[in-house]
Image 1: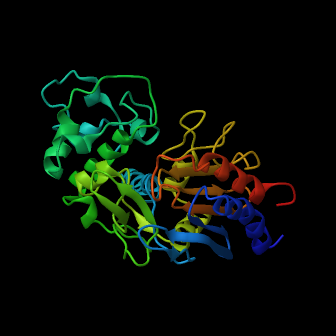
Image 2 (image 1 turned 120 degrees about the vertical axis):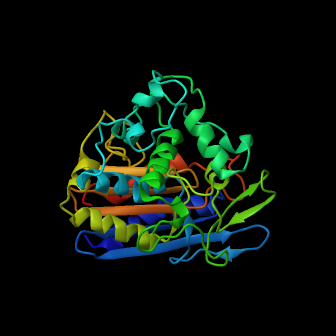
Length: 332
């Protein structure tokens, strides 16, 4: 079955969601290990205060895809180069972490635990409400007496990994190369709009949606921008690479997670027809990437489902699964 046919099947639920007014628009792309690809756009990149059409070249705020497109590969590359030990505590790169309490559990948290979201940090925390000085907020993260809870998916894990990258590189994340085809912002005339943000008092277009990332002026958990083609280029590189970093991306750390990524489980975002050898991740703004190693194929669904507001049931969870099932169903 051709990639164009596979794309047509996956595009149907996306087009239906746009026609029903659940999301303004989206771009769906599929690529195989040989580099063949198909990409198509539906709907609007922006609806307020102006209207703009979505195109296959639209730039998206990739949100938490930053975790797997930027932060995870860099941490794993450093481990492969012997510059960090994944089972060593973060204090090997951030010696002042929780420095006032040497016996604090935070000082024992490892790189691997952060990659797999196996730490006691809270799932969400409004750092941006504590100020907008990026240096102050970094040190708030490092010195705050975090309450230990159950292990959950937490941005704090990747904010800390981002700080570790900054310490090791001697420069801020936004000074680092974001990778081929990616950037830390986008031309508003080329970007999908996200939210009408009450904190910043404007519709966000081409600037990071995540408030904590904005206040930190760059972080390891969010902030990356790119097109569907850039995301598919990354996926193809992962499909064809034979490196220790890719092997670790595929290595399970729990029933649901690998190093940085999710793996298939009942009800997961990639749908019911992925092979067991599939990695996936999603982003709050309405983005997602799934890489199926058994089929030698990857797909990305990029939407602006938070435009003009996150406070609306966009049906994104159902949509992602429907697209994945259409792409990977019988005969696909």
